[in-house]
Picture 1 (spheres, helix red, strand yellow):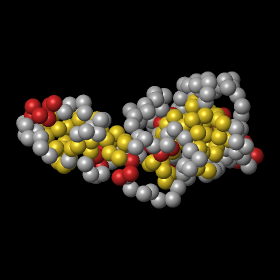
Picture 2 (cartoon, chains in turn orange, brown):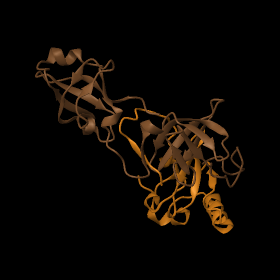
Picture 3 (cartoon, rainbow over the protein chains, first blue to last red):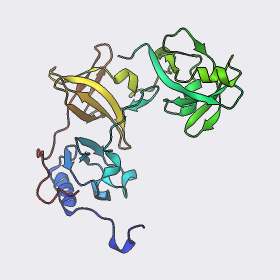
Picture 4 (cartoon, chains in turn cyan, brown):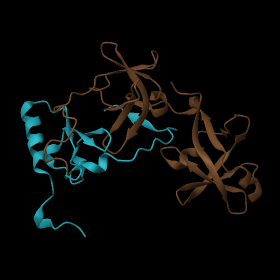
Length: 93
Length: 179
């Protein structure tokens, strides 16, 4: 069952503090280590890079507008699969 | 650097009775398994001409020239399909094939060796490179101009500037454990 709308999106309180501190310090390109995979990505996180813990290491997640409403954990899988490279390509952002 | 041949799929079994096969494709778009011309097996001695006829249960259905019955198709089960690296199209600026990046040395801006690129991953938040250090530890760095200012194929290396961490803690602070 979906979460009730009246509650608003769930986000751990300390996430907001960390994001605000990053904005205020002007170090928005630094990686903010977080363990809260369950927190929803809010508009104030856009542009920040979070290191989301996947149980073993921190996966860098640069938050963009398209990610708003998703959870941080969606971008840091806890199982590793390497697969084949074939013709896959990476773009340097 | 990239090896000369790249594995783009594997024949997973026959499909139907007329010699079609199911192929597990490793390409970004599964039907591109036949887009790079003839493919060869691991030894490079056998060559196959593929014609993709559709998809089935996550696999690609294809016909192979000269394979006309199910027994012949079944005999090809497990054969890996390779294409030469040279047939892949030239990419735009700032685009790189995973196979070209994997294996490059990663060095810091001052020339200190950091490790070797083990993999390139994209979990939906942009491409990132996984660098395996000499001790076996892996570090993950976003594939951005800030973090990777230089990609030098001639020197078989990339220059890495790991992003600084706002907080250096290695354990979750009090109250953040249950995230």
